[in-house]
Image (cartoon, rainbow, N blue to C red):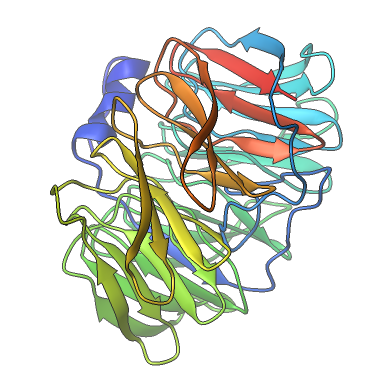
Length: 380
């Protein structure tokens, strides 16, 4: 994909034609603790489940002005919020006060799009639209290393033991040494690798612009099997036990049986044809996902039938998060919605005034989410 001249153009480019590689990597996934949300979707299986509930009615605690669009979903670790912006900055913000701890600049052209930080013991990792992966010191925001790919990096990094998994629009999935940034292995596909690795039991599941779903062994990058999807994906996969779930740009949400290597079911809304860009949350036997039909859909995970649908006023590219029986999700109509996970009934909403395409992050009794007008919001 060619470089564009502005952060907004870079953002809009993928929204218009989002070829995305979907990576689900199965390797000992860590469940998020109540205090931390260390990566995109909260845990390595990308389930979107928070460990602790929030108050019934949220209160706005603080806002932070980032200066440019925020499509990166925040990480929350040990009392700090880490998030990227289209200004080309990785920010570390105090969770309690909303004050800046440090700011890291990615350099010329290094706007941060959907790539969301992953936080390790001593470093924060993120990719940018100039194709660079950054490792940044967690205490002082100092650059530790960078790795340059040959395409935009919109994939969010995932830490697996001593490896950092991340995709690039140069068609490769990379496994980098988390300490040095050196390549351990790389897997070339037939299209851009946009989505985020989901990790469980040593295998990566990848689907993308080449309309293939692949199982890749994390130890050496070997492809274990391929499954044709019939469409490219605009979302990261979520993994729950022996199944993977993902929406496609062919208006379907697919359930893939990882043992039989076949589709378990395909869900298609009977009323409209529309792409799925949102990544699914998995809770209580349901797959909850946003659609470009302006709705949030809950699908029965066993049968693939609709459980409920909640309609907003614009497309839903934000990926939902579930906590305490409630669904938290943004919409391009500028609102953050809180829904009952069992019924889909609205419990609360907040009007941010501009599109919310980032996913909410929940930890330590707080919800953090950014909007495309450059504001970062913290609720509790």
